[in-house]
Amino acid sequence: MTAVDTKDRIYQVLDTIKDPEIDTVSVLDLGMVEQVEIDGQHVTIKMLPTFSGCPALNIIQGNIERAVKTVENVDSVEVQFIFNPPWTSDRITEKGKEGLKQFGIAPPPKYLEEDGSWHVNCPYCNSEYVTMENLFGPTACRSILYCKSCKNPFEAMKPISTLM
Amino acid sequence: MTQKYENPVVELLFQLADDDYLFSYRGSEWLGLAPHIEEDVAFSSITQDTMGHATVYYRLLEGLGLGVADTLAHMRPATERKNSILVERPNGEGVYMETPRYDWAYAVARSYIYTTAKKIKIDSLKSSSDQSLAEAAVKISMELYYHLLHWKTWFVQLFNSTEDARNRMTKALEKVIADCGDLFSYGDAATEITNASLIESEQVLLNRWTEYVKPVFETIKVAVPTFGKPERNGRNGEHTKELQDAINTMSEVYRTDLTAAW
Picture 1 (cartoon, chains in turn red, brown):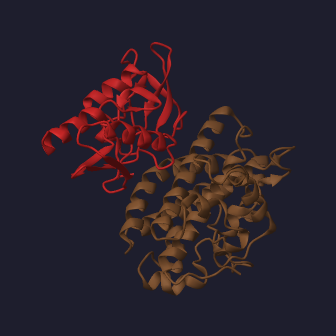
Picture 2 (cartoon, rainbow over the protein chains, first blue to last red):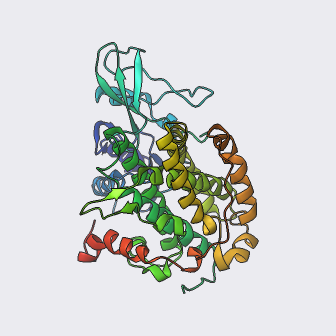
């Protein structure tokens, strides 16, 4: 296997590493993987943490190290969390947004209003007729909303941008 | 009195780390006691973010060879701590495990003042001469945005609410401001920290904070408070007795098995 094949294989493996709390999105879907470096049989993976206090980070790190080690030609794996570039919610891929919706979580909005407010549609019925119940939610990265059309409470990924 | 480190980055990182560690601890003591369930969710989320910020700083210290981040967080006695007095003060009378009679007005006033001061520091740290610290500041800033929105909302709404609420907020704010003498201080390391361009000077940040909070204080019709000279300076390891109690409680589980993987 060439280095290029190895890298492709590592990315395939990374796409199987799910967010421990949202099993419909992978760390690739979330835009958390910044760089994969191969030096002989040693692999260094640079990751961007979503929220700095997220308790899932250590679990993700362990899961990646175990999984990538099984790739042919890989002897050792090191996962590093870095802050540059900072993770922002626009790094979530289209596939990631679909995965979030499947889980009942609205993807983060693309745009912020001038006053900093934002708007998402209901992940169940796509209605725009929703209200913000709590900017903070069950995990650091989510808010709690309510859909007045289908009468479902739902969660949304908070927008995170360097403009904030 | 605590030791002063040769490297001004180390000195500043301990101040930032210990501030967020204690502020987060005091926040966590409110879990289950906040005025309503939505607030419980919000406050604990903010508390979790804040402990994340402390972790970022302790890890930078670990990278500088100061020891393992968890050990730096949990095992240093009060005499070695560099946090401001404001964050170590108890939430009110009573203790969490027995009959806490915590003061919500104090929680709101302290959180608002601390979070706005943190905002001013973080903005300055974005241009720090220390690249790692500058990158950490960009990260923290994005989370802080939500904390600021939250505490500003509570602060303004309680001040502009009933007479009883306003009286309680006024008393709470006075108590908070009396402890702010060392909030922007870098203690004995001030000259080294600012000469190294790690962050702007105490006076520059203090002036900027005054400008920053002015519109909010105008909406509650209160003059922007001024901070007096600190009675004790936490940056130099001068603390109240309550700090060691807080560290003991916070580190209790960690100390039960120092070799466990958490």
